[in-house]
Image (tube, rainbow, N blue to C red; front, side, top):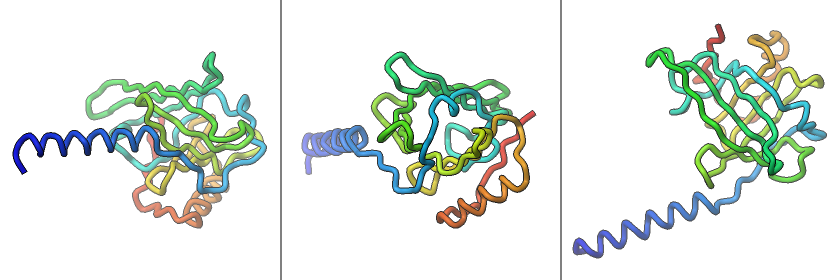
Length: 177
């Protein structure tokens, strides 16, 4: 393969990869909260636990704040403090319901047209504590309206995650000062 053919091949692969990531359907393959009340879910949540990934590496005091956008989507503002770089970090995104807004199955994007799954799978009646799964077992969050969680709810959420196929060995408990 000469240089021109190699460049053409690499360009085709790049375009194909981009098209796949933009057009791929985001599906919820887990049981999500039914009778989900969007208005009650909006507001500030503290991240108590997560599986680490590149954006959240070395972050503490992580919060997620949800509010309505004019177009009906949900504005997502994730914030935290990078204790290694000694600076605040923030990411702003958008979430949309996959189906009806009374199901906890959403998709979220922080990078233009690229969405991934956000599934609210456990939620107490008062919307104080939530267990959220991503689109696969690499993503999991435990959220709370305050900086702690009762032991019985924590254990319930961890057991639910285990029984759903999550290996909790690498679960990170987020420092909240």
